[in-house]
Image (cartoon, rainbow, N blue to C red):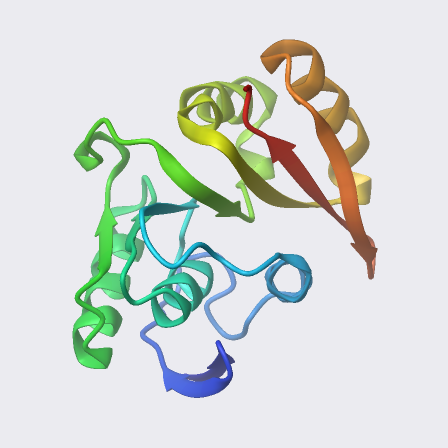
Length: 181
């Protein structure tokens, strides 16, 4: 399908069984409209990449950075690899979580998989959010009625970091999680 990302039309690979296979979902649209400019370089993370709108935007916007687009769904990873190759995005690495080296991230953007349940979601965030570089931030989009406010409180309490709502639109909240520094 064709979608508008990073100021241009791109053709992406999608398939049934992947989150939002037929369109750019509303939460991701809200996230992409709300995030600050990316660092020009370093390591960037799209956590729960699906077919890749967030990771593709990162790679198109910051061609000197290494973008890690991570998902547990092997089919999603394979689809994104194909899209990235077709677009010539050599800076995008679509991988499973265990394939990411021990690097710190200059930015994390995510439309996290809320429906996997709190224990799995919390474990995922505990694994990845502490890997932010000093003075870096993560931006997460979460639907208000799927627990955005309680997730904001949990991150602040559990990870001991600043979390603030930086945008709210169409029932979604965008949370900025600041690195511990």
